[in-house]
Amino acid sequence: MTTMAAHANRFPATAAGPAPARIGPARIGLYVFLLASACVILMPIYVMIATALKTMSEIRGGNVLLWPSAPDLVAWVKAWSGACIGLECTGIHVGFWNSVRIVVPSVILAVLLGAVNGYCLSFWRFRGANLMFGVMLFAIFIPYQVFVFPMIAIAARLGLYGKLAGVILAHVVFGLPIMTLMFRNYFATLPPELFKAARVDGAGFWRIFLEIMMPMAKPIVVVAVIWQATASWNDYLLGLVFAGRENLPMTAQLNLLVSAEMGAHEYNVDMAATVQTALIPLIVYFVSGKWFARGIAAGAVKG
Image (cartoon, rainbow, N blue to C red; front, side, top):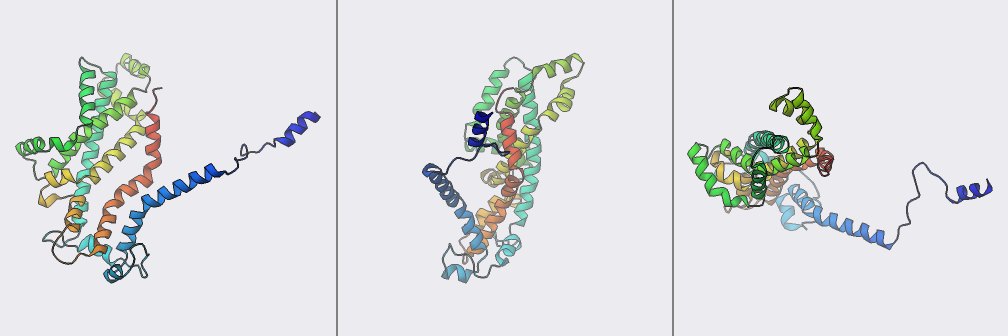
């Protein structure tokens, strides 16, 4: 009893677990490195926000790293509804709604088709399935700039060039390989006995997919939605090439705004428009980042 009491006093039990290790030089160095990395990554965002809250006179006469002495939102309002993009001074809110009309259907179609492809390649295997999957996987690593001119010809032949439907088609086509890869790898982690039992009970292709597979695939659906939405929103090239002048997405309008060569540059308006364009991906990340990490982890290991 005395020996046990001595050991208990030497190693006191705590509800929170063992006492943390002493902070040494290595841990301090790690914290300094992480802090420095965070500063380097966040500095451009700070500069954009600070510049967007300044007046032009303060921008010309002050330091770019200084916080504005009297922050105001005049530049934000002008960027949204009054900035000149080409010959039209309507702001970037038109491009915002064009981006919304592009992103929503492209995400729905790409995720749905990718889920069906992954489901087929995992459970309804057919002759040449591995070859088809390899070709789709190979397409991920080819720069999509290579396919721009053939896609223009196809869109023009279908009567979709210069329309929102043409941009949506391009996003779905280029997003389909990575969507298929995500869902195929996730479905490969599910027990095949579920599929076999459903087949024995008489369930068909779509019933198994909609009532069994998709309810179990919620983690990877979240990952796929975040991935495709972010890629579609941040895209510049496809929107510029396929949308036409009337349907430019927000990113293309932003480029026209900040690269204008006529008149004096209003850097606060440019920065405000840049922040407004980046807000949607940032909000998506902060709201659903933890579900993205959980979905990636759920499909990372075959169970």
